[in-house]
Length: 417
Image (cartoon, rainbow, N blue to C red; front, side, top):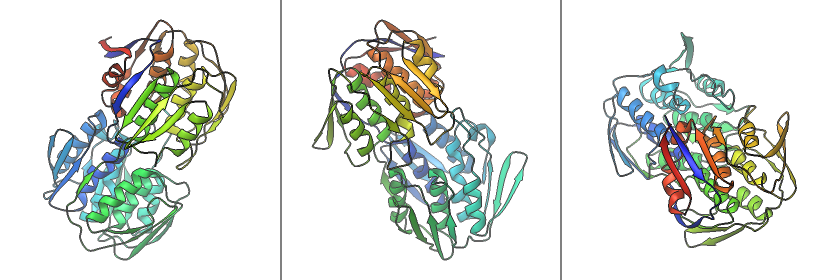
């Protein structure tokens, strides 16, 4: 098992190109199940979760060709409707095949994904919505089995704005008979990206990106071509990397459109964020100001940037309060940051971060994807050497992160543990 070794204290400087978004690529790949024919999805990042999606599509019967960040998926001959446990347990997003398989074939059998390191993320809202559309749902030996001759349009209120639930139901409703209205829908940009692809397939969707999404079902859909949007969380991570190292980094292939909450907080902390042609430049301040944040569903401050921002605040001048409102167990990175000298105390869903003058390199362990990123950021700014183990989490969501950071001047390498 590999680990990341960082000799900290280097100021990052240069240009980095941001990859396509995993959280957009996955539902787009699974949307290919909605229609027979050959689909093309480009700007797909090379990540472990994408490898899992490729395996799952192949198991279901799709023919997948992958080349230079582009996927060609021929979903004409879907032979299976089962997403097995061995794949779903490694990637919760596998449950997104449920809506497309049920809508197109009338039957889907998908393993329950279970919880994850940052808290339970049940799929009850997915199932409740499909039942409202006429599906018969049964649970059998850890699998969800759904059947429907044809889904029917319905009025569906989501108790919480679930991203996966909104995506699953939006895909399913595209082939339902009649009109489906999703209320209290998630508003994340990745949902808009999926809706744009579905519209290319012939779906009739209005309101994606708002709290109310209306889908008028059609009898059939067509193959599509689509380019995955940029990864706003990878972008945010590199923006914090520039700020925490007092660097000067130009992020290419992005815009400010989906980053407003983070940009506002970075500027409040003293960083300069400048919009250039198809790019953003981030200049880190000589002194970081303490900033409070509260995670919220989009367009609020993203929970997927909370750990990274906490690493930044650990070097601020003052005390900040970080409130986590999305997941119940997303402070597991705190004890590892404390090993590096961070002054952080937790009270329920709040963390009080009192800035210190310097972090010290130490052996630390990653507990989840974004916690891994926070430890890398802390290591970049810390004195001496930081060794991060269990970095397989990183490979789920960051494409070649150590190579990209090395290109900006970081002293970082991946080595066998």
